[in-house]
Image (cartoon, rainbow, N blue to C red; front, side, top):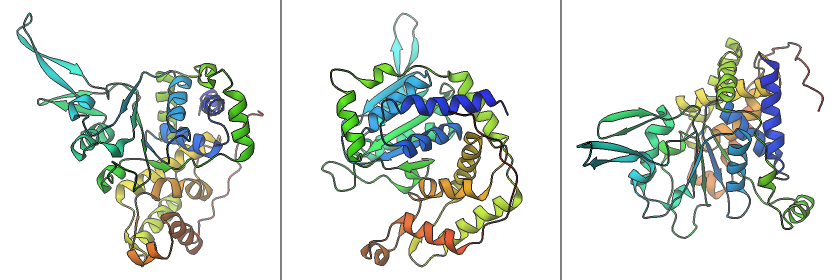
Length: 323
C-alpha cells in the first residue's frame, strides 16, 4: 500500500470540505465510492449543495467534468453521442455525448424520460457506450454522480430498480445545522468557495488508488458476514426486495475502500457496518405494512446488523497521518 496515495485520498476529502460545509460523512462516502469504482446517487431537496459537491470533487481530483441538467426533452443521444454524416470524409463520424468524460454529473436524473435514464445503464455498468453498433470506452477513471429530488416533486418519476442497483451508494445531505449554515453565509459573501478548490490528484493517481483498493485483503469470514446480511434482507418479513448479488459485491468493494481510506490493508466488520446503509439502503424495498409503520430501509438494515453475529478479526491498524 502506497501511504502517499492514502493520504491523498484524505486530502481530497479535506479539499472538498472547503466548499461543502458540515457534511463530512457524505463527502467521505462519495470518496469511498470513487475508490471503489462506484457511482453516487444524491437524493435530496433542491438547494442543499448536491451540485456543489460534485463540482468540488471534479476540481479536487482534476478530472474532465460534464454536466447535464436532465429535463423531459433531453434525448439519449445527448448522453451517449451520435453519428453524423461528414460530406468531406464521405463517412459517418461519431460526435461524443456528455458521458464521454471522467466525471459525469446527471443533475435531477428523475426529471427525464425512462428512455434517457436507460441510456446510462451500459456506461454505468461497463464503462462503455455503444452507438450504431460500435462500442467505445469512456475515459478512465469514470464516475457518475447523479442527483434527484424527493419522490413526489412535480415533474419527476421513479428510477427503476435496475437503475438504482447500479449506484454504489445513495446519500442524503439534508439541511445543515445552524453553525454550518452560519459558516456558509460567511463563506459566500461575495466569494464562491469552489474557487478555492485546488487539484490534489489526477486521473492516473485515482486509478492507482482504485487498484490498491482492489488488493485490500478480505477474510473469508468477512465475505460470509456480508452474505449472511444479504440473505437476511431477502428473507426479512418487512422487505419485499432484498439485496441483489450486485449489491453484495458493492458492499464488499465499499468495505475495502473504507479500510483503505483508514490506512488498513485488510477489512474488519466495522468497515462493513460503516458502509452498509449507504450501499444497501436504496437496493431494498419495504413492504406496504412496513412503509405505513414509518420504517425505512436503514432501520431494517440496522436491525439485521444487530441480529447477525460479526466475526472476530483483530489485527493492529496502522495509524493514520496526524492532521
